[in-house]
Every structure is written in structure tokens, then in C-alpha cells.
Length: 387
Image 1 (cartoon, rainbow, N blue to C red):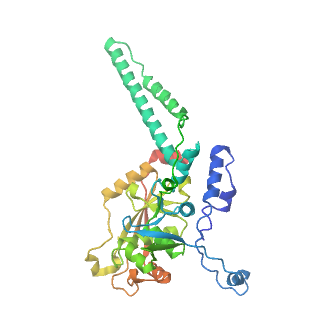
Image 2: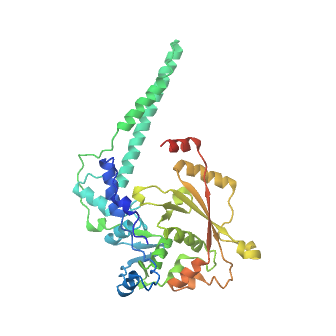
């Protein structure tokens, strides 16, 4: 399981069109094609199967877990070793660099500045494109203002005004926009940074990501010089012992998608709970946004009590989300989590479970129901069919 983000066909297939984009995609597939080796369940015992005896006699070695430090201030697990931060992010997109947009690339960027490297990083490319876009808009506004003044002068003098002027002007501006290229200044002195300055970035792993890695034995969390048990970490991550604790309910959804080889990241910038990526982040945008809702029908009369997870959404909210999803080209998933009753024997105090098996049993007491919502945009649907 999780042997790779890509199938064998995708790993070996390079676009027949060739060119820089095909070479870049092939390089990215190779770089991100080795995620963390999540342990797969053992094969079923079969007396006549050679794989049964192979797995019993020569078990696969367990990978060494990464070591992170719990930070109460940021409520995250921090990893400061540069080698580990790059490795753990590359093999599953875990966490976020504190001085980068996503991947911890601070040392790489600053080292490139000292050596005069001409390759543009993601942050530099974004800044340059924003500057280019602002200059283009300013130039376009200037041309439109001049054109309006010229038309007003013609109207005042009684001369006829050509109708195609604006179209020609827009075509000219659009052509210039396409021809512009991102360039870095050549007459720039190379800076010199100290090792302490290069070692500033920290990889921050969110509590749900850290818990998932702990469950599969790929992360050890320490606090104040000692290793935290699973129960101690759950007390840091959760707020209550109720079965509808927001952290637990959202982690059920996170665990559900992560086990299906889906990269799950926070959806804060889009006003949702999670973003889902079916490919490594540098190669694709998130295809779906997820909002988590609670389903309290098993509570019976207790459902009148104060609930910690919202159960309903208004049509105004749905309309707002759909407008946003249409603009960013994503689909919206509403995931309803069926929450077990408070005093049920099947749902013990989840923060007191100190074994992986016990916590997984808690997760199995929850059920999920997905609702896909989609606002059809006629023009976009027609364009997609033509392609």
C-alpha cells in the first residue's frame, strides 16, 4: 500500500510531445515517486502460497521513524533537521516549511542566491509573475485611458469613431502579455549567508498529520526532553474526551482519505476544512474541497445537548461555496460523520487509548457519508467536452 503516487505506466511514460514540460514532469515523477512506506497488512495465510512463507521467514525491515518536537505555541510537531524536513515532505507532502509556501526550500533558495544559480524557485517565480501582471495591468489601463480620451476628442469634433478600436487595442495588449518572459536581474551581487541563517527553517506538521504518522510508526513525538505516548499526544491534540470532539471527528475524515493514497492538506485559504490532491502538490492543483459535518442521529434524545460539530448548512452557505468552487475549478464534498453516542460501550474515552490497535478500534465506530455538490457552468462544461 502506498508504494507510489504513480502507476508503473505513469512512471515510464514521458509525453510524446517532448520539450521542457515533458522533461520537467518526468523529473518530478521520479523525485516524488517514492512516498513513505506505509506498512501494508500481512497477506492472508495460505498453505500453498510461497508468499506466506516468505513473509514469515524474511519480514520486511521497519523504517526508522522521524523525531519531532511538540510545540504548544503553534500546536504542531516541529522538525528542524534540514535533511529530514526535505525527505519527509518529498515523500508524502507532510507539513509545511515555516519560511516557504509549502515545501521547506529555504536553504535551497539561499544557497542558490550565494552560488548565483539562475533557476527560479516557486516563491521567486510567484513574486516575479505578480510584478509582471501588475505592470501589464498598469500599461493596459494607460492605453485604455488614452483611447477613451481620443474617442472623446473625436466625438467633440464630430468625427466618426471606429468600433473595432477597442478590439484591436485589446488584441495588441494581449499579444504583448503573452510575449513577456520572467527574467532575473543580471547585475546583482551575490550575498553570503552564515550556516545559522541557512538553518532557520522548521517543518511544521499539523496534529492530524502527526497522529497519522504515529499510527503507522513513522513518527516519534517528544516534549520537554521525553517521548510522548499515544495517549499523551491525544491529550495535547484534542480538547475533550467526547466522541464529537472536533479534532477526532475531522481526523476520522483525514484518516479516511490518507489511507486511499490521497494527499490531504488544510483548506483554510478556501474557507473549507481540507483540500484533496490525487497527485503530488508541485504537479497538480487540489481537485476537491472538503467540509466536515456531524450526524447525531444515534444520540436520540441526547441530540438536543450542545454539539461540538455543526450538523446543518444553509442554502446561502452552499451557494457561497459553489461560487467559490467554480472560480477555483474545484469540486465540493460535504462529508457527514456519523457520531456514536456519548456513553456507548463501543466508544470508550478516546484520549485514554495508549495502543494503536485501541485507537483504530475507536475510528472504526464512526461512519462516513459523502455528498458531492456541483454547480454546472454551461460554458465551461462545453469547453471541457470540446477538448
